[in-house]
Length: 209
Image (cartoon, rainbow, N blue to C red):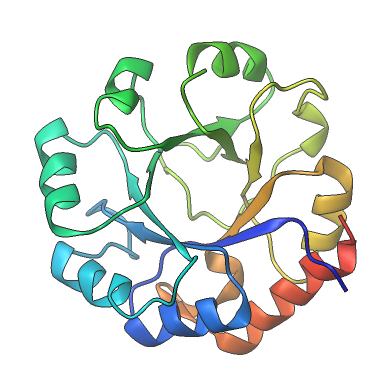
């Protein structure tokens, strides 16, 4: 069965998990450079994961309100192909590194996603996550997918509480360019479960979108 929706496995902390994700068909893996996250990695850990990945797996670095110098230092040490910003970063900041980026938006009623798309028009897409007070992603919470406008002009990466049980319904409802999962394929925070990753990918495939 053809799998058109792209899949990103985020919060990889171990070499074996990155390799398993790639072998199971993940199009991208996410590395978290945010010390407050239980899935945080340092540059050395990240580099060891990136170095074993096969071709055509996009490496994504996640940052939250990081100093620009810290992002540049990470880029100097880890060959990241895409940046993902989860904080209060401005469009100018996000575009300043010369690397394609995603802007994450924590969705709740009253958030104007069309305005976000206009403001961050240089982004490769918007990553839509659940709003949880004081937490920048990785919460395992879902949000109301009907809050997403049909006419959003940027590609959507759908995140927030996805797992093998709900991802097919999510893909059919939203028809995103890609889905992003972290806690939904874990046995513990930062520790991925190969069977859960495989079930998640099968769920995306079953959606037929």
